[in-house]
Length: 328
Ligand SMILES: NC(=O)c1ccc[n+]([C@@H]2O[C@H](COP(=O)([O-])OP(=O)(O)OC[C@H]3O[C@@H](n4cnc5c(N)ncnc54)[C@H](O)[C@@H]3O)[C@@H](O)[C@H]2O)c1
Image (cartoon, rainbow, N blue to C red; front, side, top):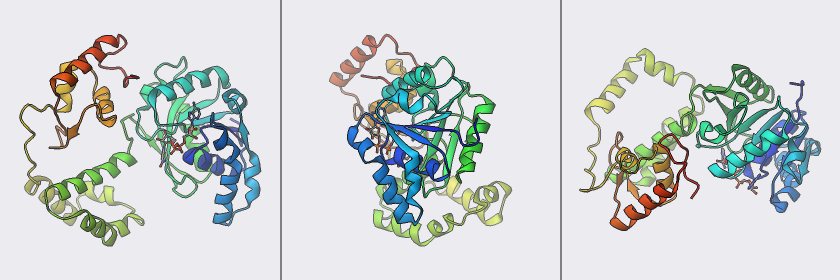
């Protein structure tokens, strides 16, 4: 990789323009593709506005070029990051196109927030150079980039990606296994799950949850150094708190309605993967209510929905428990 490799960015939305800005600010030439003409037309202007607000030289925006085709944006790029809409089939198609258009040695990264990188990259011919780089919004303010490898990603691609992001001032961490939500979003959602449970169980209202977080450990989070380390090495107060909360004072959760299923039971009934069931829930095809952490959903399926799902599964010849989410 050159000292300042050219960066290709796919998608000029909220994340794409911010990621382009970070690389451009650190001297990289950046080429950006988006099928939406309006996004492309305002790309430089949005970056200039951010730079002005940050008190940084606006000239960095001149290193960012808007391209009308994906090929133009990536044909000379050594590192390519996709920040298009959060949609699995769309991302799979983009990476299939990238494999054709990008140089063979270029690293291909997705900025997906939650979709497993494995599902996005599984159809590629060369999966050793494909990985995830999960940035946080706004990319030019929040330091973290999670670098996620799959079972196929080479150690060299991971090392080069971490070095590239560190060189532009990011805090890059290696996520060693490809799980939905990676590390940051899993932690963030764990807090949200507990907040919802506290409110659902009548322990406090949502405003109190906000106040408690903001007026207590929320302040510490910004300067946190070794909380995880402390928990595992047995700070007496931390250990006592964990023991008390984890084992003695779990909030009793309501039982699921009779006849409802949990996620694994739905998988079994229709012969599909967990990923497919979560996709159905996210899209509102299945309605689900949380009831307990190890069987997190109470899913009710009436006869009509049952028939629809069975028909859909029967018509999806490609579907298998290890397949990614459906495209229908
Ligand atoms: N918004 C966040 O806080 C955040 C944080 C981290 C990661 N992400 C992830 O980044 C990605 C982009 O999110 P966003 O918030 O920037 O969305 P956005 O809607 O602001 O931008 C998405 C862009 O993708 C473009 N697009 C649509 N089809 C395309 C195609 N075929 N090729 C190229 N571009 C295409 C759209 O025109 C749009 O400009 C998503 O995968 C999202 O999950 C978002």
